Amino acid sequence: MDRRHFLELGVGIGGTLVSGCGLKANRAQRIREADEATRTALDQIARDPVLRLVDLESPVLIDSIQLVSDGRDTFVHVRSKDGAQGLSVTNGRAYLHEILRKCVIPYFKGKDARDLEAHLFEVYRHGSNYKLQGLALWCPVAWVEMAILDMLGRINGRSMGQLLGDPVRDAVPFYVASSRRDTTPEQEVVHLQSLIDETGAKAVKYRVGGRMSRNEDSLPGRTEGLIPLSRKALGDQIAIHADANSSYDASHAIEVGRMLEAIGAEHFEEPCPFDDLEATRQVTQALTIPIAGGEQEFSEARFRDMIARRCVDITQPDLHYYGGMIRSTRVARMSAALGMPTTVHISGGFGFVYMLHFASFTPDIGPYQEYKTGVERYGKWFDPALEIRDGALTVPQGPGVGIKDIDAVLKGAKPV
Ligand SMILES: [Mg+2]
Image (cartoon, rainbow, N blue to C red; front, side):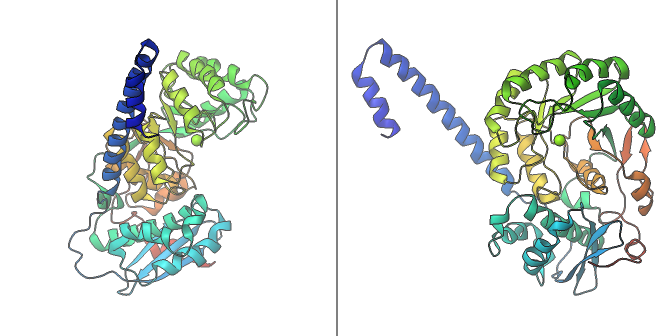
């Protein structure tokens, strides 16, 4: 029965019960129409061009894309037929190299790099690549996308961030993230304090729950002990974030969220299984603490729905798992349209550099970005070297990703 017939039937029968139904039906229709308008508006925003190239009148044809490694880092090295080059640093995951070689590189060879934005959809269509959609496809696409952006930035004399938006900041406050779950609350606060002392961070993130654990904690009572103890031990000046990594059903997540609200925590990440958007939405609706999520998401349509339905308050595409800087920028734009910040998730030791570029042009990134380690190892590849100043990382200057000497970085690297 279509909607019109349903309403006519309701009107025809008459009586109190039916007028109640009619009210409900009208309300449901209004909500559906509003949802539809929101989705259409977000789709339009996601279609707006992101990449901004200036004065690039001749094609930049991709001649080769090579995977090379120096034993510590693995790189994707792209060259154009005119001899331009660009480099990206992968986020590990050597098991995806075959997908890069067989499914992604063949698509890009010979293409005009200036059309990168369109290629992100065409490489997904190429062959049956869309059947691999997920981290398996989008990490290799991100490696190539980031290498091409580096090359285009070098040709254009502009940084990766400047290719994608207007600069809004040159230093990025961060939270330092603990990756432990095997600690008691007492051990964890000592560990958190050591991370703060090492980095000068003004914010931390720790893990709660057991990770994809159907409400089980990693150690009995750890979460209930850690939340109040963290505030007591770290003091009122530190911003506290907690990540459940999909540990809870909605009702358990709401209980943990209330504990986080009681200590004035900054955000609560992935409270429910990441693909259970309805459970996540219930938690978001019930709590005042902002709910963050999206690091496992790989679908543009589902990100749109997550935003339209306000399943989370803060979107967190992973710059690699989600397929790179351009696709993640579209998520940030859709989020911004509904007043939601985008605090990207990062993976791989070098991933924080891409986060810095993303933060350099994205207006609303929330107060703190994710950081683990890396500035000691990679900072000196840049000129000026990247560094931490007063709880914030400096944004890379110079063209492309900002690595000052590609040949020096690649010295001793061999094809994988
Ligand atoms: Mg997380």
